[in-house]
Length: 234
Image (cartoon, rainbow, N blue to C red; front, side, top):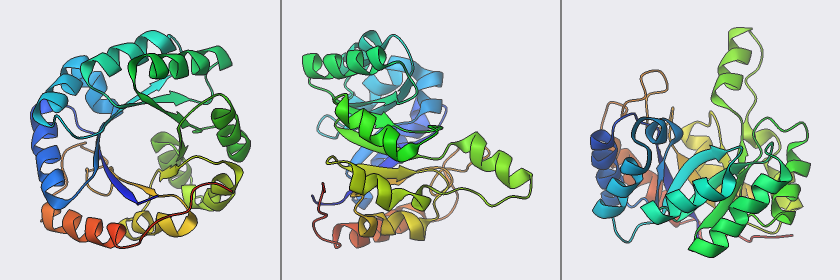
């Protein structure tokens, strides 16, 4: 599978999200993500605005669905999302409902293993329940809280190889990665490279990071796309 670069729009207003998305696509980003902060702030209106502005670009709606799976996935698909996110910690029936809605409305399902007791087993469970992709995820609050206590920050790289080897669907690693680490995830067998807070979005203010972001993104995209095909599956 050709590596894909996804920018997570962890922003709180659609105007800035649209500007950032346009800049990211100019730089070579493949997918745009309506991050959870944007969905909370703008809801379906934010996704519709992204779809209207970028009619041919895959849009991931990071819903982090825990219940009401069919309706949430249906609404986002009809608003223009091509991918939705359901949590592994949700009830099995919720995951099945999201998968069913994905099939009914032509939307892919990304299963997120955040806060699972066994993240490798959680990834396999998500695949078994019909998810199309795995999000191997260390959460924002978890990372910051652990560091505040003077402990080592956990990283999705810690078990990324094990997760990749456990499933036959594409994996992305999310949560506190540096730019250098994110760009290297295809080396672990994870072809979906996600750029968001704190890489391109300020992790405290949830605004677009300062500096020449477009030039940085272009360099990152060129490096990721030059990696070549990533083998997916055991």
